[in-house]
Image (cartoon, rainbow, N blue to C red; front, side, top):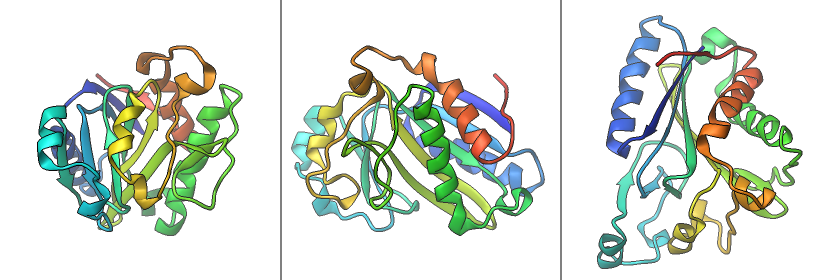
Length: 212
């Protein structure tokens, strides 16, 4: 599996990259993990409701936050600097993974990543990944023609105040956390993104080979 990291790029550009690699994987090319950060943005999945964004358009404009309705699963979430976004573009049939098992496989990968910092997640009844009752990662995927897009987001040193403006993933009173908050020290994206990709690769029983 190829790994590619793009630093901070606009959400639209991330969508375009997914479409490009989705097409290539459909044509038989190697599965790819796209890792990146986005500028501040709220995205709504197929079950997302505008009412789960708790501030009006004027406030969003003053905060310079864009909103997008997307074709992924799930509801509303926040993406921004300090958060690793991982978009796995994977042919599930080729890997022998059923779509119904795919999300659990990604969660296992995130749990492996957290365990490398001696952090244990504690809740598999709610969507996402939780640590001591606070949410550190969200997931929302799409499978088209057997190939995945969208994926997961893990808070590393994210400004968590942006979550106050939404009902994240449709869960009232959800409290976010980050790797830096849990460890009580600053952790950077550069410190962590390869570790996260490797952990996800292991959960998919494959190795990640990096390309610029």
